[in-house]
Length: 542
View 1 (cartoon, rainbow, N blue to C red):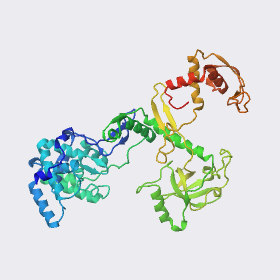
View 2 (cartoon, helix red, strand yellow):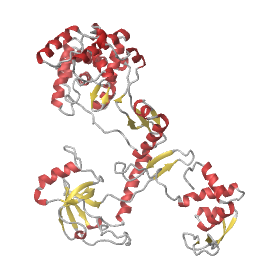
View 3 (tube, helix red, strand yellow):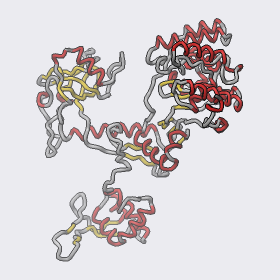
């Protein structure tokens, strides 16, 4: 049997170079974590840094004879064998910690007798090659604990928002209780079930004399203090995606997602957050100049307040007991419209839109100047039942709901890059209004005319060719034709649509004079300018 099932089994000694998949972490210039990339959310931690209570809780619930068996526990195996024989299928594992590690590292999840035999063979081999502490360390860093977390350090941060070194006996017991069925015993899914499972583990620890009776009672009476489960951390999505593409190209996807890289960037979190707010705010302002494109839809008000309230809470993703936040743009339903204001139902609360906070909402017309083309009555734009975007401005005096402003999701896009002029470091990058709506990074991927931003390069090329800031060029009309008899011609003009006569290069650059710049480039030649631009790092076609 041994020779039959030991054929083609993995080589256990390869684990001497055990390097499981770990998290790549991205940091700002102030060493704040801004993003993570991973296949398995794991943070490696040596056994000596894992609390004794967590090691004991794991042994208590998974394998109390761990330090006394040779990889398999004959008594537990026999008990599982009888149970499975009665059931006619594999319903109980009886696996030791070593067997669980063997299964996780080398074998599939199928519940068959041949797989169990291979698991036992591998477990014995593991015990011959590694010490008990080495096996326990691998186990505590390898096993899945739920909610995307692998290993005890990631689990502690997921469930409690703290590192494993800072958790209590009760929290150790809860983490140790998870591997058997992480989803089933998740405290986020069913807190009561998770607490019962945790308390069984605590009692088991006391039974094995790992903790005292006083510690047992204290741990059992300890309330859950769970951290918030968050999606993948990313405080600067366009910047981080640009970094991700660079890392993947340079090191490959395996190193990026499994290699546990620590990447320190030039990002300034404060500037980045200000940049993101500025882009979103001013794109909304710019978009409103073109008018109001209408509501998101219309709700049948006869459905009743409770039904509409439930729908709005779901749409706005309000958590239980969560209220409305000033400045946070949300959806609402128009209840009534009069000559001066609109009543809006928000779900947890109500509000009103004054005509002054929606007078921009004329029908779309690009020929009109949005600064002056205003509506006079709310009924020109909104109707009862309309589902709309609103921004809570303030609570109305007397607590009579919220003062609101009408909003809409902008179609116009924009981008921003903030550089340190002394070092060239990128301090902030925003590639669009919303990364979730569009991953296209307009800051680095969009090809647009540089306009006057290119002028300093032309003047630098001129200085290189012998011109000085005091050199004079005549700002006067000039016409360019492709051929002498051609009708197509180009006549450059200044923004002010007038000419200024003799002008120094210093003045021309300061005031961004177009005609002087064109004449200067005609004088020094296009090739020299392009050569300088490329030497400065510009790679796009010119």
